Length: 195
Image (cartoon, rainbow, N blue to C red; front, side):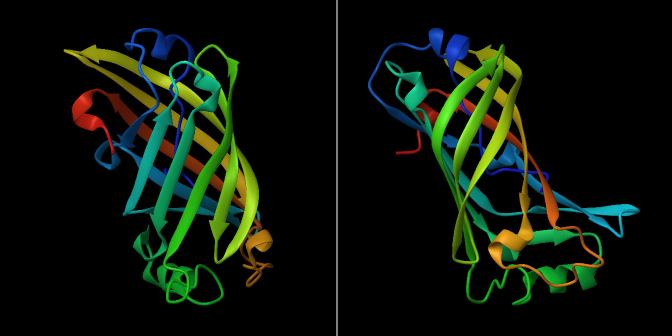
């Protein structure tokens, strides 16, 4: 998946410029984000899609940035692809089963620094009623100050095995590995708080 979901962390130097307060919760701005996915077919070519509707929140404990928490909810019925046959297949019981499982959820369990402007996000992904651990890599690609607000753009990547969530159909044609790419924007100011 080329996504967002569904999420990034603001740690280290980014937090240094913010005034010290208790834990704050901020919305991840969907207008500037994307949760995307990609698969391979027969090992020869690939296809990509994305989710049109999702919500994300970032909770930052500024005294303990390692306690940063990310939560993303994805509307599985909002999946978008360029060809309609694939879209119908994705929404079917063999794949997302949107009638029974209209949402997927990611909840982080740990966010750690992996180098300058890079973070490792461990968490749990719930998809089709199945919960599995997943690890994502986040990279800060832009950080600007606009008035009283800090704005940060992240690219988050990872992968999952679709069979781990019960999606085993078409294994000879569709790869088991699903790539994820998430683009997320977080704005740190009072107006962007999500609580």
